Length: 329
Ligand code: HPA
Ligand code: ZN
Image 1 (cartoon, rainbow, N blue to C red):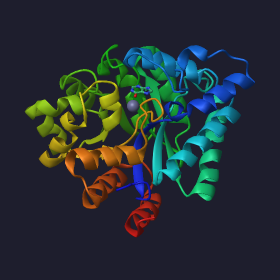
Image 2 (image 1 turned 90 degrees about the horizontal axis):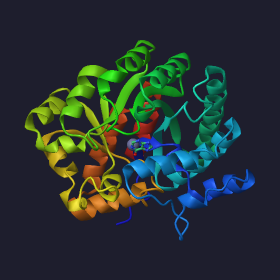
Image 3 (image 1 turned 135 degrees about the vertical axis):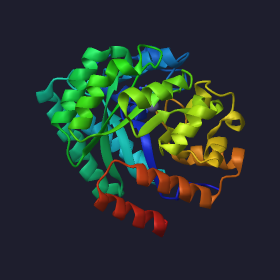
């Protein structure tokens, strides 16, 4: 079955990581920037492993230089997501790539992305909310500046704060100040954890950063104590199955723990992470889950309702999206 038409909620999407390669090549040409090294023969992004992926990601992002560029990017990404049946999306936004964490510049970039979100809602029928992320391998000082940008711009569009980047650099406790600052401003919290490191990363992230959602968290599946805590505390996992398979976290879909975690009572959701980098889309994720685990419409309905419950938007938006999930469009 093709899952394209099914209305979906996506919680874990990196805005720059969702940029179609043609879009980045187009901007590079306009700005006369040579990016040939980051593309394969077939035009897709080329990288060797996760750390190299992060540097290719940063190189691709370097062609996005103005609020107008981010407005165009946001519209292109939302058009693509809407065509995949996504009716509500939360994307990670990075002040690091939007004016280098300068608050005045950041406000302009954010306004451009919010404007694109309004246009996409009207044109494509998709709602977007933003989550500012600090970047772990850029270190705690930059994370503090990023948190300040987020705290100052919390509003109807900007709903959350989180952390992306290389999990093998530093530890969650290095970022406590940034997460405290964001929490005090009323932002909701999530962080990448346990995509690369072991179950203790989930424990440290919950203890030090007090997040309600975790990006990935999938390596914790074998630790009964950590799983029990995730279940008891109702922590929601933003699982990105094909990202994990393509990056080699798991050998294939059949060995991915998402189904075992769901059966145990973990609140799992499904997202694409950086779709063109991982050659995925929301409907490909759903088809792969159907094929590997026999997931059907009832399971996907449960997954989407878990995701909507865990969404960082206001109650009115949730009601509107719940009606669309119930209507099937
Ligand atoms: N994981 C961690 N950091 C990231 C990613 C990701 O998939 N994409 C962009 N930054
Ligand atoms: Zn991610």
